[in-house]
Image (cartoon, rainbow, N blue to C red; front, side, top):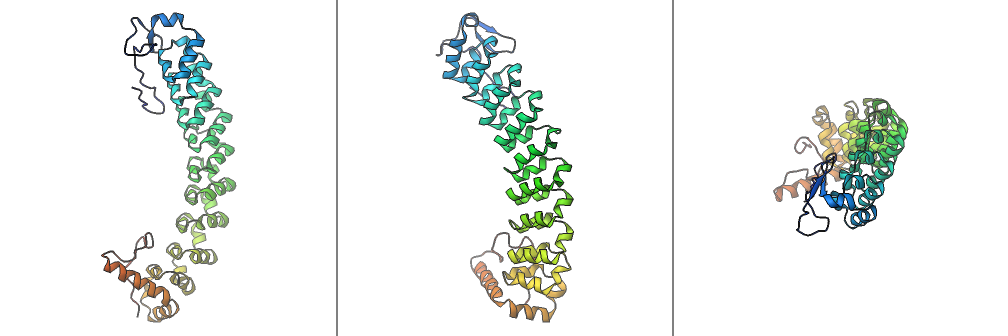
Length: 321
């Protein structure tokens, strides 16, 4: 049975397998330097062409080959083309072959677990690996993670891979922009300077209001920026600076979309009769929808605020006079 232990460990290879198949075991076994066993007669008589034919039929037959044949890059390439896991039986010397490793990495990025340390430090090879699958960045050394081009290849595929970048690159506008364009949550890995950039922040917030959590305090205190965010999604009111949450126009902009936004209104305004009357008159359609939704939820035995994510926290139904 073939068992893959981890990305960096060898396969567990059965011993005593007959080269000719079947249950009959080979009478005389040899064991070469790296622990693989096979028929002693085969070790001296098996030629390259026969070995290549065997491996092309089933890459697992590598376990029956002597080391001198497994050191042949052509034979190993024939096995790896079928399965990258064949690298577990590759001699150390062949694991430094960029051509052989490219074949494997195109199948699965985890094949890099078998690559030689020198190959993992080759920026050209690692760029190709990351271009093939952004997850290959997991094997990129700390030094190579400082390569802007390499990190950009990962960011355009998966924005949150920005987390692998060193601090100096997390404030790189183009890199962060590429990452946030792909996935808004990448902004949480951005540096403090870029988090305060209005263009980057707007790019993230347009995808999801929760990106406001990672924006700078200055932007959350910016009236125009927050008014635009609340206009797109009333839930953005939660992240507005406390001074802005006292602004009637901003509050009404949220309440007109969903009365649940009342949860984010400061306590002082909630107890202000003139404010609640004005809010009720101006946003009454939203209030009716809110009450109907809660009534339906009570009849069905569910809690109020039934819309998922609409209120991460907050009070019960607000008092409206």
